[in-house]
Image 1 (cartoon, rainbow, N blue to C red):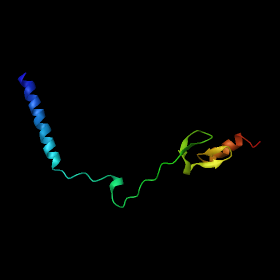
Image 2: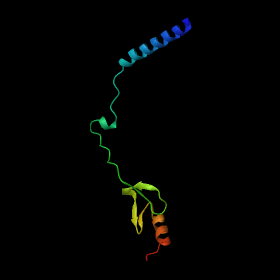
Image 3: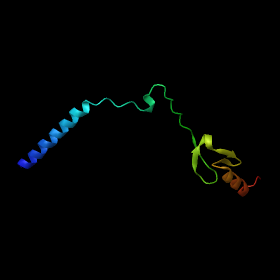
Image 4: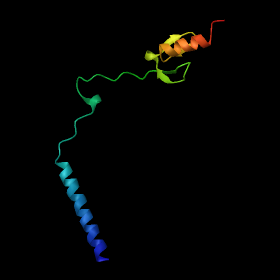
Length: 86
């Protein structure tokens, strides 16, 4: 029983020592959003899925085509070849 109390006392002392040393540290610098002069992040974009393979990509990167939007020229060409105009 006395060993359990001794171990508990050592753990409490280590915890108190860690807390007292942690207070002497300077505060952490703010993240990128809190820095002066930093750009604000771009707002989230709508995600669209490729009509050929189904992969999701941002609206700005999607290529429009007949039948929907595509992730690349090869998928747009393959889709338009497989689905000729009516």
